Length: 334
Image (cartoon, helix red, strand yellow):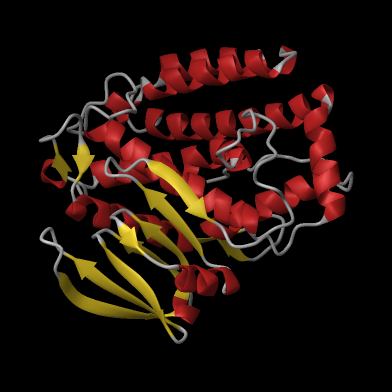
C-alpha cells in the first residue's frame, strides 16, 4: 500500500535503481545512516528539512507520478514538485476556463464552496454546543452571516463574508480546546500552540487537495473562490475550504483534548511558536490515520476513506463544469 513519507531532517535523497535512498545530514554536515524506500511504496513526499537532490531523482519521481511538497524552517508550505500532468483533458480545461471567465458561472461555484464550508463549520459547533461547550452565540452569528451568501454579487463581497464567518468560528476555539488558548488568529509567524497547529494542519489539508486534483482532469491553477495566482495552485485553496472543518479542525481538537499534543511539543525559542520534531511526528501520524479512516458513503453505498472523499469532490466539480450534474459541496453527515 502506498503512503506518504515525511522528511523532517536535512538530508540527501538520490535514486538507486528503482529505490529512493535518503541519507540524513547532521548540523556539522556529516552524513548519517541511509534509509532505502521502495518507489512502489511512495504516494508522495513531504520535505520539512533541507533536501539535497538531483535531476535523476526528480526524473524518477516524475515518471512514477510522485509529488514532493516543501516546507520552510517555520513549517510554512512553500511549494511543490508536481509531475507532468498526465490526465489533463482539453475539453475539461476549456470548460474550467469558461467557468472562471464568466462572472455569473464563477460566483455560483464560489458560493457552493462557502456554503459547504459553513455547513461543516456549523456541524462542528453544534457538536460541541451539545457537549457543554457553549458556542450558541457564534452559531447564531454564523447562520446570519450565511444568509448573505446568496445575495453576494461579486467575489470580493463573498470573500469578506467568508472571512467574517471564519473569524467568528475561531472565537469558539478557546472554548472547545482544553488547556490551550488561541486568542486571535496569527499566521506569520504563529504566536502560540493553537495557531501553530492550525497553520501546520491546514498546510497538510491544502497539499492533500492539490494531490487529489492532480489525479483528476482538473487544472489546479484555475480557481473560483480564490483568485488564481502565478505561484500557487489556487483550486486547492477552494477545495480546502470545504474540508478544513472536517479534516483539519476536528483533528486539531482531538490532538489537544486527548493530550496527544502537549506543551513540550512546541518551541518558543525563536520569533514565534514552532512544532518540535516530536510534535510534527505526532501530527502527521494522526493525519495519515485520519485520511485512511473509512465511512459509509450515502450515495455510493460502500466504505470510502476520507482521502477518497476529496477526490470524489474533484469528480463532482468536473461533472458540474461539463454540464453533467450540478455541483453540491460535501456536507458531513456524522
